Each structure stands twice: as structure tokens, then as C-alpha cells.
Length: 155
Image (cartoon, rainbow, N blue to C red):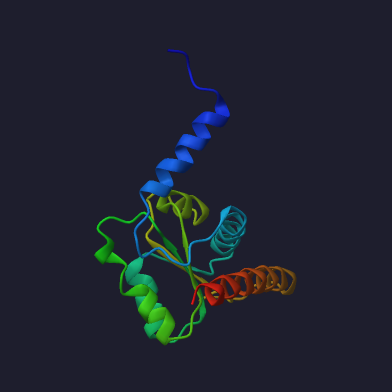
């Protein structure tokens, strides 16, 4: 019994993540889109353009804020987040599932695992510099177009 090599360990980790996914986790981001989405979440967290957690996200959607909703696919019990995609569809907000709540929390600059986040295009308080605003909007637009393309191919 020797130690597993590094690629085998990462493959096993990925397999465990996929096994923990909820059956409603569709549209699920692929590796590339997931990486790009988490990068957008990280950038939005730096600029205070992020709502974390189910309660905050639902409140923000009901108030009419627009953005991109990123939902973790490995939530248990699943009843915690089943209403979020419906709210997003009613408000015409694009949403995407990522494989892990831990990865989502790391990207959102929190240590606690997070069920879902809402990426806003502008900060709730204060203003962003013109350059940062343009970068954030460009990343946001690219991810949203990929998400809507993925969603349209599903339905």
C-alpha cells in the first residue's frame, strides 16, 4: 500500500465532489466555466459587489437587484436552496451551479462554506473606479453569456 500519486488524488477528489452533487444542480458549470465564475466571484468580493448566503441573496432578488446567482451543488439538505432558482427565473436573473460550497466560500473571501452568492454589477455602497468597473463588467458579461448559452442548450 503506497501513497497515491498527485494526479490520482485530485481525480479522486473530483469524483467525490461529483458524487455529492444534488440532482437539481443544473445547469452545472464545467471546469473552465466554473473557474471563470469563481474568479468573477473573487473579484466581486474584493470590490464589495457580492451578496453571500441564501437569506441575503433572496432579499436582494426580491428588492429587484440584478446580477449573476452562483449556487453550490453539494448542499445538504437540498430544501435550503430549492426556491432560489425559481426566484432567479422569475426575476430573469441568470444562475449557475458550481460543484462545491467550499470553493464558492473561498472565492467569496469567507471561511464558512456558502450555499449561494449573488454577484452584483455595482457595489451596494460607494463607488468603484472607472477602470475596476469596466473590468468587472467585462468579466460579468462574459460569464453571463456563457451561462445563458449553457442554459439555452439545456432547455
